[in-house]
Image (tube, rainbow, N blue to C red; front, side, top):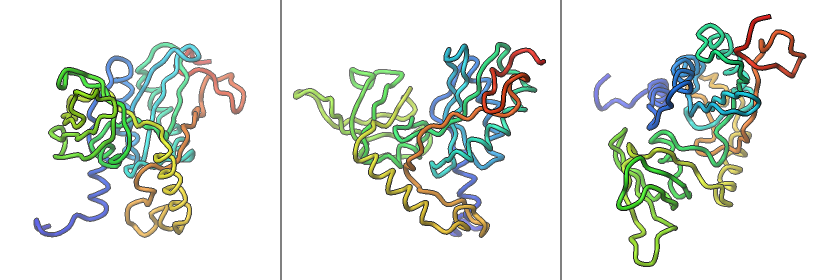
Length: 250
């Protein structure tokens, strides 16, 4: 392919699937993430984040999405069924735990450059790993994203700036430790609009039957996080109520 030929839909989709995250987990969550990334990629999905908490003893939440930012309950179920046996074999966690698959939600974390680009015009809260100016915490509207990869920079209009402070700030995205959209009426309206557009698309486009990329809302689909526990939990669990994973085999 020559340089002036456009990329194919498959190549574009692949590039989005392989787009690196700006932040990485540590400890147990990092081990789970390392296992989850290739499994999700084979399903046409990508990892948003892994979070390990003390909920219900121990809960491992794996947040997933399609490259266009969309995800539904069926996607979570598919990812859960694929990840469950791999986690059983690899055993990144030795204690008993509950596995939860979810969508990012409307007020989603922003973990890739493309996440920030899709969120232009919306309000965000973020924290940096180093001081930017004289602070690490910011709240404001995303005005632009300039550059690519870890060299990209975020143009933010602060809404928490004091009268004697500059409202416009430039933040290197490589220095962002955590960022999340703020749930506003504008964000909800856009999410609802995207969801309606997705529902009105022909089924063949939604499923990608024409060989092109899977169609979706493209920005912020209204997907409330769903907890989906995989089949094959604790062996004595009743249907629909799987027990903790990672415990002793019975």
